[in-house]
Image (cartoon, rainbow, N blue to C red; front, top):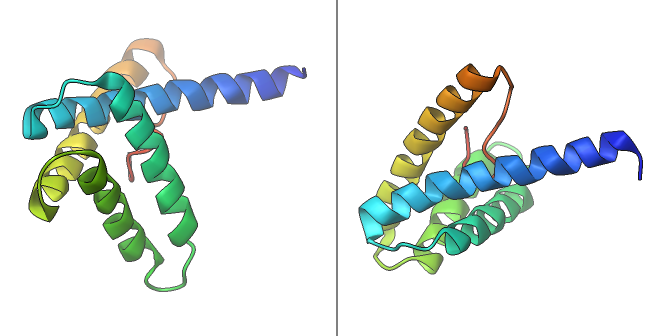
Amino acid sequence: MPVPFVGALVAFVVALLVGGLAIYVSARLVADVDDYGRAVVTALLGAVGWALVSWIPLIGPAVALVVWIGVLKWRYPGDWGTAAVMGVVAWLAALLILFVVNAAFGVGLGAFGVPGA
């Protein structure tokens, strides 16, 4: 296996785990659900949903955001409002996690599965 592929795979897995951690924090605070594995799967599903519709001209990002919030609604208890609050909390958690990790280790890590982070 070539080394760049391994590096890309490691970066993907770490970014997915960070996105999962942000969703886990959000789910714990907003929906009172304590399941990191569920959060990582939710991050992956949300990223897939985002990728499937975000390319649509003019309305893609807005549709993608609704799809991502819909994934949160589907995976966690609550209504659309709860899912939207979870999304905001996950986004804020991702920004905080990324700030700390990137400052501590001097890397340019992202959070897979959390839009805009």
